[in-house]
Length: 349
Image (cartoon, rainbow, N blue to C red; front, side, top):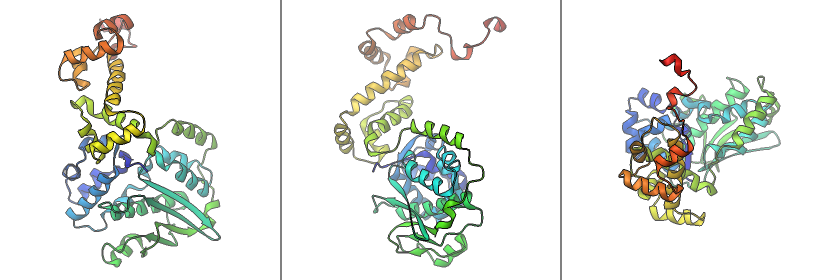
């Protein structure tokens, strides 16, 4: 398992937290999460911090069932592009199989299981680290999202045969009945939804087989949040953080909620090192920035997290055997600022 989830996990967070009288930015800061994460849906964040955020909100709002109600509020928005694959799968059963097989696109810290035997099926949510702060909030959130997903597939009046939760009630069980319309089963072996297998064969009325194939091809190209993709997560964090200034392994490890030494060790197991990833990311970003004539060389150095222009030029010379200005002149002699590309320059005179 990998300890990250997509920022999509925080869909509608600001609006929901505000409705509970909370300051969304303050809640994120208290969980050591950047407020900018709300605007980076494909970004990643520590699942440990995500769970802690739910717990902080539940305590601050004096709302024990914050996670459950937030999950019901989020509904299917949490799935992002995966939702289109699910909705075009043909049948309810096929849709749940797609969810199980592709859940790692969104969440590397948990798994969705889908099994059926006889007349009963169970859609369950499993987290490898069960002692995280706020994990009960996260599991109840998953139940809320699961209910909303099933209702979107089967019908608005769908109810599970049982909602299973591993933990004891977080508040009076009457509160669960008021919110869900039924009482969950507590102390179960897993957290999930139990229902009749008869719904699995139900066709999805708006399913499009051709569109399903197109979406599947697109999702195959996305990075999955699996354990062997740690270097890609570091690169993504570097791309997000470098424009704001110098980035160290301590800063990256803090975003991941792990110890810097642990991060170095795990990167070494993947055959790389933090400095190598930082260097490669800067090199790739430098090439992209050089294609835009509106970005000066000095600004470029700052966007790549260099303390001064000299250090950037020295690194660039090492990468490409030329200075940034020489490279730009040789490779892109007629380069125009992006705002002017594709326009008829005569019309601007």
